[in-house]
Picture 1 (cartoon, one colour):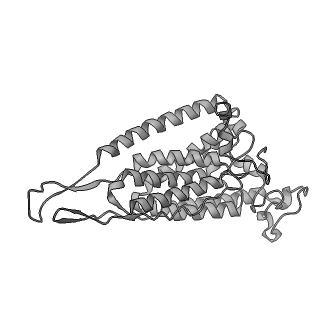
Picture 2 (cartoon, rainbow, N blue to C red):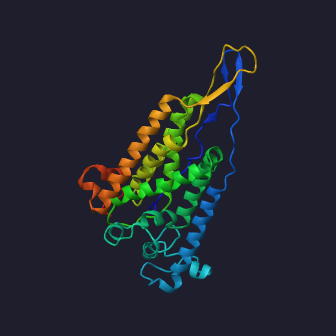
Length: 325
């Protein structure tokens, strides 16, 4: 969600759906409805449209004071970018982003602007930031929407972005934050929980799990670099992970009436007991997490006061960079 945010490779998980199941002498073929993906492309269009509006309002030629250099790509007129010293991602100024809805703790808590927890999801720091996030959204989101429909994927995307904003606000209180990264990590988290809760109907389980975990680990590791809001990543991932147990359940296919030796034996589609257990636990944890997070946020509490080491999850200082700002 920050100006240096990166997510990549989330669309390839190595999962192969089992298209058939065998039970004794019987061979059962599954037929699942494939949805047409339209919501994810609309999200992409909306993000691009918002960025165009932001650049129009930013109007670098008029508002740039010249302290950091001249505008980039001046031939674009008022859509030209801020000087690279100010914004190396080819985008607007931080003042413009803050004015248009970037996540800023003081305004959320003391300015009664809780809407920023949602608006920041639709803002991006620059063309590079936007391009990386939208490519990730296409690769991850379209496949999920085709399998589970626009309602489930839309809820996961929006609620994960909201969850990422809450955690980010609790731990990062002196910088602004923008981007769809929390929502994207929510989709990754949902993919992981979907694999776990529907474990019995997948082939190549171990390969799928290892591949997905490696992808998630790499993306979270990138978040410890400076200027990347890894708390938004973590908050979005945890939210999506829990939502996957709730919204992405698949029926487990099995035979009943095996005493019938003919082909007319009935197939019963059902859920396993462990799926219901995961679902109930996820609902409880999700409600508790949002409640505690929002109460702490609007009471003005700083998450770092309750976790002295958590700041290392967002940035690890080295000899090459500092995490002071």
